[in-house]
Every structure is written in structure tokens, then in C-alpha cells.
Length: 328
Ligand SMILES: Nc1nc2c(ncn2[C@@H]2O[C@H](COP(=O)(O)OP(=O)(O)O)[C@@H](O)[C@H]2O)c(=O)[nH]1
Ligand SMILES: [Mg+2]
Image (cartoon, rainbow, N blue to C red; front, top):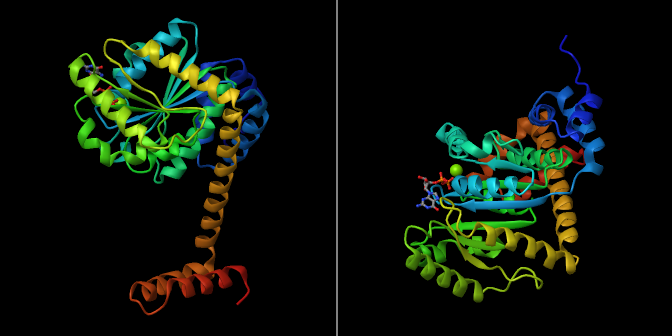
């Protein structure tokens, strides 16, 4: 028999800020075993009162824009100033590419061995929803372990941006200095969720970086800000030299102060939690639905009928729902 998880000891270890306990707690949360899931739930419930204390920062940008390099410099700056910094990575592409995580750890060489830092890649999951769920729970565990800055990194691919934006207080988009014009259209959706924009690699071509800053400022100008309390600023920085990262940290603090003054940070977090709950409900119901024997038998036929145009999608959904609910 495999030994049962000692939740109390694990809880005490996490609360004490013990990194080995934190790592074990995260592994527990990520586990697919049913007994682990039960233990993880108990652990999270017990730790809940100890969560919420971190600045939750999301960072996105296309591969190569300098996210890992920037987090290394930014994280070290904060760690040296006495902060405890956790870095979580959500990468929906890492399953395909065989893991960019290793590369990231070497890119965060100093931060990854800093006593005040903790770096943890999210496992490559089959669904982004699954990955994001574990990342949310991992974020809470890091807070319970006393980390006061949690940075969630994600590649700017597909839906991962909105998913990460919905688990943090401030969502920062890193941009390349010479791509302002082309990307403006493509990245409109991103501009709408970003709380700050950072034109990175300003050291390469400061003039181009300034032009890009102006381009993004103009682009943001024509969008209505998501919050009346905050207009997203555009900064330039260099993850490589560290230039501009102190200003970025001030932006994070200004943003928090502005949202707190308007009561919006607590509201944003509360709304995120409720949306998360509804996501989980949908996920559970979807699983139960697909696992239902009568549904499993009928679904492929109805899918074929709908695909062939023999049956309206709504009628198929009605039939399946009735079958599931036992009302047919
Ligand atoms: N010159 C310069 N190069 C940078 C800067 N930030 C990152 N890089 C380089 O850009 C490449 C991609 O950086 P990386 O941090 O891995 O990007 P990520 O894919 O967004 O995590 C690496 O070769 C970095 O050394 C910067 O601010 N200035
Ligand atoms: Mg990276």
C-alpha cells in the first residue's frame, strides 16, 4: 500500500515557507490520483486563510521577446530588495516542443538558485483549462508559503493570455521594439487585456523602442480602458541590462494602489474566483456527460448526423440533454 499523504505535516511545512514542502504540495495538487486529489483539496482548504498576500503579476509575449530574461533580472532585483519571488510558467506549447522549461531554467540561472526565489513550470497538460487550474492552485500554495510576488509567465499563443490574465492582479505584455506597426492589428485583443505594456530590448535600438512606445500609446489611446481607475502605461525596458525594470516595479505598485483605492482589486479577485468556480462546474459536468454510458453510445451518431446536416445542432443537444437528465 502506498502511504497516505500527511496533510497536516505538509500544511505546517508550507506555512513555514519550507521549499521542499511547497514543492511536494504542488506535486500533490498536480497529481491525477483520486486519493491525492482528496488530500490536495483538504490541504488547499486549510491553507486558504493564508493566501492572497502576493502581488500577482502575469507576463506574456511572443517566444523570444525576452520574458525569461526579464523575469531573471526583475526577480533578482526584487529578491535582492528582500522580496520572496515565485515564478510559474504556463506554456501550452511545451508539450509539443518537448519542454522549453529546461531552456528557461538556464535562462533564469541566478534566480533559480536564489534563496528567496522559487521557479516552477506548470506541467504540459492536454487542455489549457487543466494547466491553468493547477497554476491557480499553485499560485495559492506559493502565497501560503509566504511568497509576496508571484509572476505567472505565458507565451502569447492562443487562449493562454486570457486565461493567465484572469488569475493575476496585473497583466503585463512584453513587446519587441521593431514590431509595433505590424503587431498592432494582430494584438488588439492583447492590448485590451494588458494593464501595462513593456517594449523590451530597448538596449538594441533605443530610437526604435521609443517609436514603438509611441505606437502602443496611440493604439491604447483609442481603446477604452478596462478600468476607470487605471490607464495602461507603455514603458520601455531591457530585460538583459535591467534598465527600466525599477520603473516597471513602480508601475506594479501604482496599479495596486489605484485599484485598491477604487476597491477594484478585491472585486477583480472575487470575480476571478467565481468565474473559476463556474469553469470547474462546466468541466465536471462535461466529464460526467461524456462518461454517461447512454451518452457515450449515442454521441458519435448524433455528431455524424449534425455534421452531415441531417439534424440541427440544437435538436441533437436537446436529445442528449434529455438522455443525460433522464427526462426523455
Ligand atoms: N539585447 C537584448 N537581448 C535580449 C533582451 N531580453 C532577452 N534578450 C535575448 O533574446 C533571446 C530570447 O530571450 P528569452 O528571455 O528566452 O525570451 P522568451 O522566449 O520570451 O522567454 C535571448 O537570446 C535573450 O538573451 C534584452 O533586453 N536585450
Ligand atoms: Mg522563456
